[in-house]
Image (cartoon, rainbow, N blue to C red):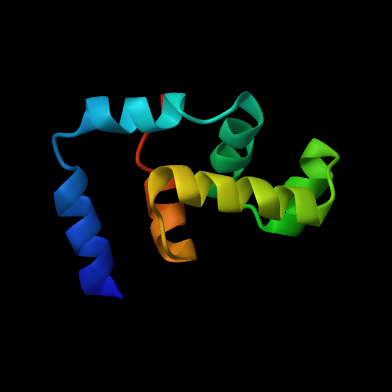
Length: 85
């Protein structure tokens, strides 16, 4: 797992423009969900904060993962915390 995260970090170094492009591909609601994921919030906490069902938050997470070609929660959390805007 640590090697996976390290590889992600190395891949993303110097790709700030790419990260911004990825961020801009998300809907405003997906951006809100991702921001909260990056702050360490759980799906249930995000649902409460945004007044959504946990299923809807899960659908937003899936959509983000699909758009960003992310295949694990660890990678999603990592990418969420990289500096989105």
